[in-house]
Image 1 (cartoon, rainbow, N blue to C red):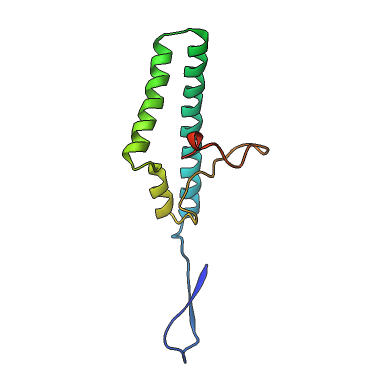
Image 2 (cartoon, rainbow, N blue to C red; image 1 turned 120 degrees about the vertical axis):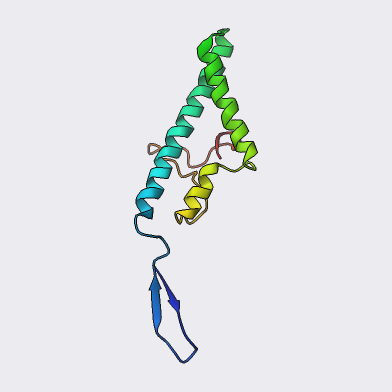
Length: 118
């Protein structure tokens, strides 16, 4: 909660304003969980495409995985190289304007190379 002064200099009353609407914490947590699931799925597809390439495999699953990676890239670039969920998170009151706070196990790197984060 943020205390915001109201009135004139002589009026020292303050109004307490909750910056986040009720339920936004749960909604923000849901966005983060969804973002993590999407991120994990896309990264799994990328790993599978790389594995298939090294193994010399070419089948329907490789095509689907490559399509998922390509679609994500097009959506990301089409949105001005900004994750579409960032706008959702900002409307829900996230402080940093980013949904890169993924739910990953302890010991995972806090940051990823630019090609792996959005």
